[in-house]
Length: 366
Image (cartoon, rainbow, N blue to C red; front, side):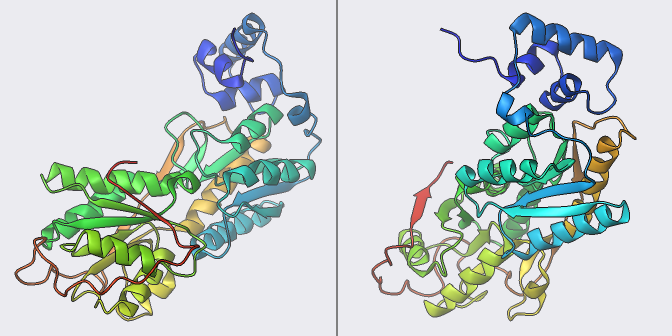
């Protein structure tokens, strides 16, 4: 028996994006007559009905934008929100903010709360843009939105960085320095599709070079440290010479934990982060990282969103990819002499029992 018809079914039938379907059926934004006709015919043929709870959240204009991000404890999200707020203020809009704490189940509640305040549109970062309850609620409510940080494969409005390509660049740099045995340390993929994309790009670079596929360690973002998982990784992969961390905050934690374990960075292990947070240039060793412009991303997203809200431009159901650059730092150097991925510079320390709240998932494929 066929399940309930979704807005994605209508989009597939009409040959357009889900956000275009939402806008046509809600009368939001300027859509071509031919597209409008295809969408309405598809909705009629499939007997599609909006979720009445989601649609009831629509209201008149309030000149307020809602934003949802995972956390403010990572500076990159704060920078992006600063960009959103500056662009919104310039155009006469206020900002309401909610945090989901990297919990996919909390995103639905946060999104519903923002819509209940009758925001005109949304800037969102979700755990997984390909399967997000929050995105579905926004679509069914007819609320214009733009994703930030997320780089979805389907046609959704987004401003982001090419995580996979950037991570491939990191792999190439590590390989040039002789690091053939590397690992990727990341927050859990269910909490961040960006982490998964970066791991896949890292693997792309190593596989293209005929080098071993990097090991994967998923850790809890909110853990104060990751010493026990790192000990296990070093014990199981004693020839590791480099670690690529899914963001700079995690990389700085890893460097501290490695120091506590008696490992020197970069003499024993090189470490690279992702984001380019300012504090990375102030610590010793300075952090090698992929630098991004998060405030620009937030501003671009806010301007795109307000243009649609005010119907001053056609809805852009595409992803705008902003440039990135690799920032050198002393945390990345050549693999130890005589090592080049074939041995460890120092012996692995004795194992210490893992703390109960520190967990890791070790695998070679997501």
